[in-house]
Structures are given as structure tokens and as C-alpha cells.
Length: 97
Image 1 (cartoon, rainbow, N blue to C red):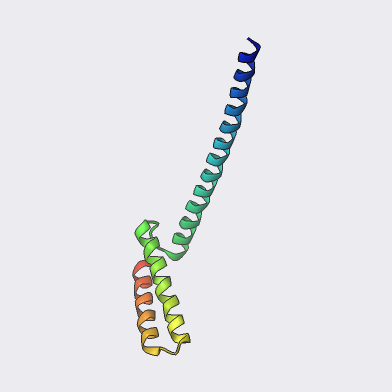
Image 2: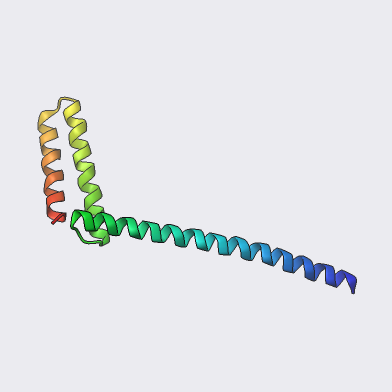
């Protein structure tokens, strides 16, 4: 009988530890989800764009185009720099109101 009590106690202790870890991870991911949502909401409100996934992807692609333009200008590739800059500005002006 005493052995059964020990294993029951051990199972409860292990279950409590697992429950604490799962609850802690759930709290952490919930906190990160809310922080990410608030970041996207503030960014989109400031830029005057929608909060849809397509708009966020378009914003990232437009910024990558502008980054490519800066890299091209630093390599003294003027024509490709102008093309990348025009593509980036066109995409960003299409997304941002």
C-alpha cells in the first residue's frame, strides 16, 4: 500500500510540473502573440495601410527592393539601382495610402 501511495504522489508531482511548464509556455506565446499583433496594428495605422497579410508581405518586399537599390548604388550600378528604387517606391506607394 505504501508503494502505491509513493507512485501516486510521484505521478501528481510530475503532472504538476508538466502542467506548470505547459501553462508557462502558453502564457509566453500568448504574450508574444499580443505583442506581435499590437506591433502590426501600430505599424499599419502609422503607415495608413491595411493589416492584412498581403499588405505586410508587400511592405517587406518593397523594403527589400529599396535595400537592393541602395546596394546597387553602392556598387556603382546606376541603372539597376534606379530600376530597383522605382520598383520599391512603386510597390510601397501602392500599399501605403
